[in-house]
Amino acid sequence: MSSSGVEFTALHQGQSLGRLRLHLPGRHSATNAMAAVAVAFELEIPFKQVTDALGAFTGIHRRFEIKGEPNGILVIDDYGHHPTEIRATIGAIRDSWKRPLTVVFQPHRFTRTRDLFDEFLTAFEGADRLVLTEIYPAGEDPIPGATGEALYQAIKRKGHLDVQFVLQDR
Image 1 (cartoon, rainbow, N blue to C red):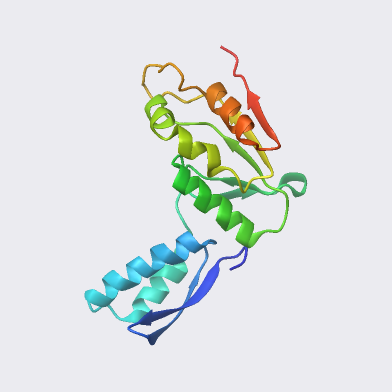
Image 2: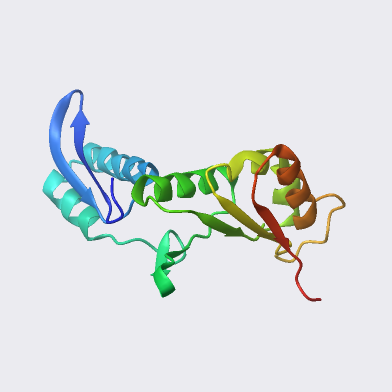
């Protein structure tokens, strides 16, 4: 794995199908590619056709999208709002770049924040610094206790060394 992607050998029943080169970093990208290989194998799509298609794929809007590197600071936009997605994104960054990692996160939906509150407390453990904002409601009504500030306080109590909360102007 590197910042330019991931390369690996695809196996079926212990036999090599060949090498795949993705332009996306992270173990989760390799796992997703292997799911595509498995489906293609079952549909008898030639492996070369699969490797060509996967090798040409550069990702989708707001999923691990590299926005630029102003003043040497790499900016990556990722829409992931589930703790599992957050961990996968942080893991991909850690596997690909050896530099300090600041995560800026706006929770999405009051219900998701409430329902996954405990999982969010550990989702950011791979980040050196975490900046939280208030929840984007996406049309939902507020839920008592499910706020960005409550999440901030709980993560701070959990022991994350550098977590900040940015209160939005109303």
